[in-house]
Image (cartoon, rainbow, N blue to C red):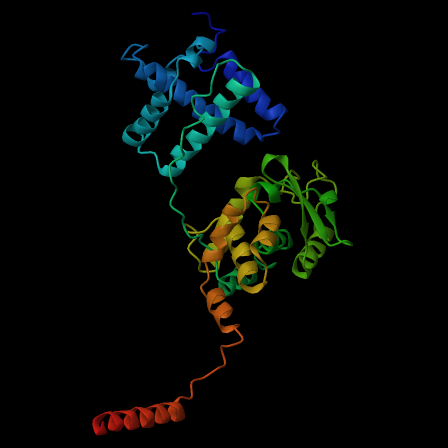
Amino acid sequence: MPDSIDIHTFPILEEYLGYMEAILGRSPLTVKEYRYDLTMFFRFMRLHRKEIAKDVEFDQIPIHTIQAEYLKSITLTDFYAFLSWLTRERQASAQTRARKVSSLRSFFKWAANKRQIIDYDPASELESPKIPKKQPQYLSLEESKRLLNRVNSEEDEFASRNYCILTLFLNCGLRLAELNSIDVDDIDLEAKTMRVVGKGNKERTIYLNQACISAIEAYLPGRPKNAPEQKALFISRQGNRLARTSIQRMIHNYLKKAGIDPTKYSTHKLRHTAATLMYQYGNVDIRMLQQILGHESVATTEIYTHVDQRQLHKAVEANPLASERPDLSLQHGEEDSEDSGNSEGAHSE
């Protein structure tokens, strides 16, 4: 086999992944995940159909020979076999299997409808596994304040930068990738807004509260002026855009300083915290929260409607009849008297 042949992919798959990136605007990370899922499926197919030698490692199963005729032979039963294999051999969670289903649906829908490489879409009736809804983990209001108060300029030469990062996480509900990609020009302090690019390269506007404005204004004067990467808002010691891993490590250290278990919380948990605090204290409805967080579906946002039972108590207490109290003593006495009279009349008769 010539060295130039890549056994881990095939032309139709590469065309689809190129379509995802160039036309649909999917991020490189999303494309990478789809590549991984689909490559695994086609390797499984070759294994499942006994088309390769038994001693070949799974990650080395070649798929470069797959063409349109091979795709046409795939059925719904093959998908079920793949999902069963994932559960049995890979101990894949429902969430992992659901992502694989999403990848398969997208690819075969494209192959059937967009490119018409196959006559029909075998994944059109493929159902996604039910994913148990987990309650999001988040910091309480007191823990959030404690975390912010741990930032000390005497202990940390990047205190203003790190405080600003924590403030934006806890007030704006940003994803790590969104915060990491913020440029100076994305911020308009006069309009009190910030532009962020979320999943699928979708832009949205974040409205900044006074805590965010103050934190940004405190950070900007000390921000390196001659750094190689001048457009980035958050700069590293070397003058480059602050890496995601550096942000994660910084959050980890401050959680530990604040007496909060860093193994239970992460940058994404700070996003959950912001969303939860807005829902609990900000009197925002679910649609507003969806827009703030940049969720494509309101179903994703609905996890925050279950995190605080106090909202339910407040709703019940807000009923205008909530102040009414029973006063039935006189009514009961009259009823007893009538019943007594009726009883005596009945005996007389």
